[in-house]
Amino acid sequence: MDRGRSEYFTSLLPPCEHWRMFRELERDVAYLDIETDGLRHDSKVTVVGIHRNGKTTILVNGRDLDERSLARTLDGVSMLVTFNGRSFDIPLLDFNFPFAVPRIPHFDLRHGCARIGLKGGLKRIEREVGIARPREVEYVTGEEAAYLWKLWERKGNENALNLLCKYNGEDTRNLEPLARLTYDRLQKVTEEEGD
Image 1 (cartoon, helix red, strand yellow):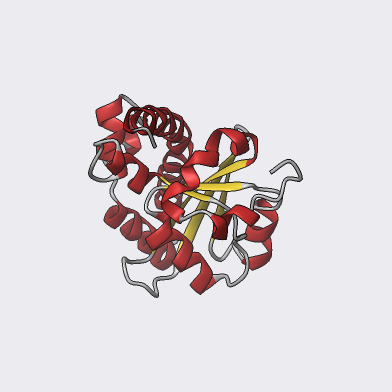
Image 2 (cartoon, helix red, strand yellow):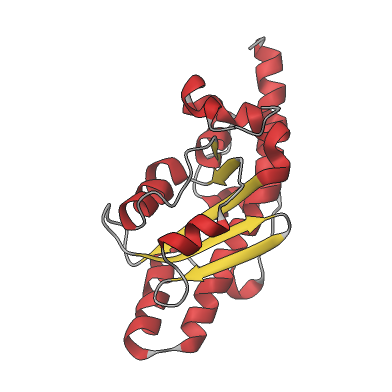
């Protein structure tokens, strides 16, 4: 940990315990979310949002999203934070852009939230804990995100692409306060359990 080699811990700790390193690695965390053209295991990744050190980068397929740009944006990251990324985002990124995502600790908030009694999708949990979104993307869903991509891809609708990128940016930025809240509650629960 002192040498900045967080990847060492990925095989040492079970994935469900990676959250324990969050505070130690927080300064080099990347909050990551993807959008796709569908919900299949072989879907095309259309947009990748990465929020890191107060800055959000949105990479768009066909513009600036490729294996090199993704690897460059994640360079130096010590931990990934996602919501359902262990079973959706990371496998799809690996399928579409092999070797671009580093093998580092991964705090999947879907599982962390479930351990503290917050169940459901990201938007539902955000509302439950008081994290707000701008009105224009407040009720956009993953299915609508795929539709927005199709409007952009087939008709060149710039407004659809802009809304999709705004939606994805909110997903990534909102992971940061949710990760802090989840970490704090997980700490409390494990202390109470004597874990």
